[in-house]
Amino acid sequence: MPQEPRIDVETRAHTFESSLSTDQVERIAAALGQQGVWFAAPPRRDGEARRPELTWDLVGDEPYQGYTATGRAAVHLADGHDAPTRPLILADGFNYGPSDLDALWRHFNQPYQRGVPGFLDQLRSMGIDVVLLGFDQRHAAVQANAAVAVSCVRRVIDERLGDDQLVVGGVSMGGIVTRYALARMESEGVDHQTDKYFSYDSPHLGAWIPLVLQQLAYLHESLAPRSDGPGQAALIRSPAAQQLLWGWVDDADYSGSVTSASPLRLEFLEDLRRVGWFPMRPYKLGLANGTGDGVGPDLAPGTPVFDLQHETLQLTARVQPDMGELQNIGVVRFGAPVWTSATSHVAAFDGAPGGTLDSWGRLADATGLPIQDRLRRSCFVPAVSAVALARDPFQWQSELYRDLGDLPKDETFLDAFCCDTANTEHGAVSRPLIEWFLDQLAGW
Image (cartoon, rainbow, N blue to C red; front, side, top):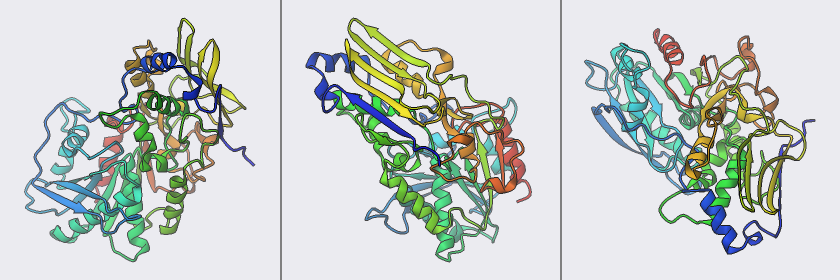
């Protein structure tokens, strides 16, 4: 029986804040720099965004726990089409607040090879109508935004000319939202008329944000509350983050299990099981920004990423150690420790093959601390999660470094998948992934 992954925090007083003097609070807050969102990819601002032929305002087809989500779709018709005819829905991923569909277009249509049109332009040249699906609250619960995705599928079917089947999926969280939406429609006996489902670096088994970075975000918020908008702690605390992270802690002083700390994740996984886990009718495709050879970024477990020492202040944060008991991941001290954090039975997620996020680098930039280039990025969506390895979503960390090259078909919930040739940025457009996906669509 696997040991339960957990975290244990010790503070000098009842809470971290009460351990410190006013001067010490100010010094730590200053050391942590400006608050911002460390844990989501920034929108792409450069380049041109094509103007869509149609824009639809969408309302979820049903409320979730009293909240009805809303969103918007931008419809980019293929050359020669006057209405959606061969529609492909691409849902936006996780961040705080509303989707920026122009940024989503720029991201997926950016050049990935000299002399080759962007991915979305290639789809349009193939006669495929691109429907970019966005959400007004990307950080809301997956079930709520899935209701917007259901409304989008229904709208596409209503507006479509002819009877060509749909392709439906999304990037990052968007792949999970559409997975749930299609499965829910099937469980309710609704024909979604979807031939293919796809997920682009989506965390089917869960995503990873270093536990010590989650704690530092909470520490920063408690010491210097932000009044000019959401910071990193607000993003971690959001419903979608709780549902999608494999390991989550609810504050800087939390001790206990990291896989069952959030009731929202437990409820979401139970809802997924209730609607069938995955949609059964579509052919299911997965794209992973991580490699499939079991080799991840060069991040040795337990390596100190930050080790700030100034007079009596010390602030240390480490790469996630590999298993063991009470493995230190962070320390704040003024002479004697005032806060220490350690994990037990948690695998070396940071260095696993997968789509990466530069959370360590963003913290370094905020604090002004030096950081080695190789330490800026760590695994965010492990490759085994992106390819939907057929494992219990709570107990799969022993498979983090698995070679996926000869994975038997019954070892994944997908029908086909492609891993990148390097561990690239989460959601990045790369030639191997795009060419594989276009080949999968060629016969549609």
